[in-house]
Figure 1 (tube, each protein chain N blue to C red):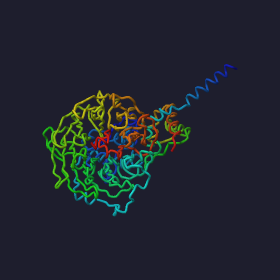
Figure 2: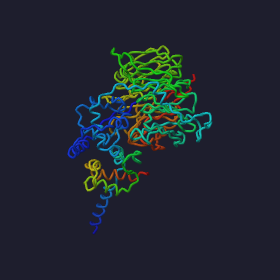
Figure 3: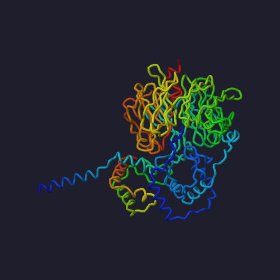
Figure 4: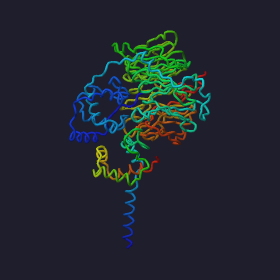
Length: 101
Length: 524
């Protein structure tokens, strides 16, 4: 039993670690790639891109994974998301979700 | 001031997008009838109305020879990461982008288009007829006019509703006014005699006369097609504006903006060739009733006397590809950067002669320049655009006119900021990687880098508030804010959101002439 608790704890610990977004890495990627179209707080006025700041992190992750896996179609986003790892998606989504609009 | 040039860093994306585009589309060789208009309306403010390049590279048949049309389409569509080039996806249709690419690859660099004094006069617009009825005091709370800081917000597309000059109270860090500028604002200058007047120049060479008390445009005039050069005379009566396209300059009445005289910029360059020339910096000086203007390609500095006929004294063989400059010794000496010689040249504006050519690292871009007095010596600071093996900030003794030190910094730099009351000289690192997020701080006493600030975005154009207590920095095209730091503790204390902020101009500059000098020294 004790061992099971132990492994359970380890599993939770690792899951948390995976889930914890590196906001600095997220910010860097957001600034160098995403912000080019989506801006940091908001996209450029008159630009046809949606705002990302303050959006739900789970939604952003899901959308990025769908773009990466091409289950959601977009010429630009399929290409941009193509090479993203889960960790990078996590960082970027974590960064944008905690920004105030 | 030049913005960093364009690079396409994310090759992988470009290649993938190229493959995709190749796979699904066949180019339409027919030129869109409005391709020229598309170019003028979307590209020319940065790439030049003559297709010859300006802030961004030249786009013409010669410069794009051998480039894959598909790659060019990709760049237009996605923009170019880590540069000012925005994504035109969704703004221009695929057909329009194709016709633009075809237009660019088949159009030669255009001859210098004409923009005469008659054209300028016809472009003068008056928004407020009777200026005597304007409020006598600022219509917002402000202790001193020198506390105003103006930011040139380019807007992501270099035009549109994001393009404006934003004015901030540097005591409260609150926005107090915005002036929409249609295209990207580049330079903000202040009238040294009438504190309520400011002048904004855009990348498309419009000049706006702004009333800072009521935060509105009073008048505007178009002085050319491209070019940031702008100066105000010490008596506040004249403006001088210089253009990249066409190759001319003009003196205006600073009150009415009426053009008084134009100058064709041409001359014999340091290699003995007669050339037509872009205008580099234009500067008024507290030293005399003159303007100095740099002829970039001709390598000359012209000193224009503000009297009948505006006579010109030409100083030749100054250097190759002149650009910007700053003043010292109460405005008598002018320190001007020559990109291609990697020198900064000291000019005496009284004798109208070159004093000395000083080593200046590589591709010196002095921005607004900085000068400080340390232990009785006046030291000048010069930033360097170039990404050479050794990236340095040059320090000169401006009394003896000799190099004191070349301070190693982490990358290319664009503009130094200093203030008599602040302990550090701030320089913006612009090398195109993570370093672009940073600003480095040089200790005035030890003349070495003591701290690196991680501002985020593409951090550039640091500027101190007039009291020296705060350091303002543009987080640039990827940061979308101006960040404010305490100039001693270097803690970030405020952020003012705006689209693609660039140059920052404190009203205090009027008092201290060159950033870092104390107003007291000016009065001596």
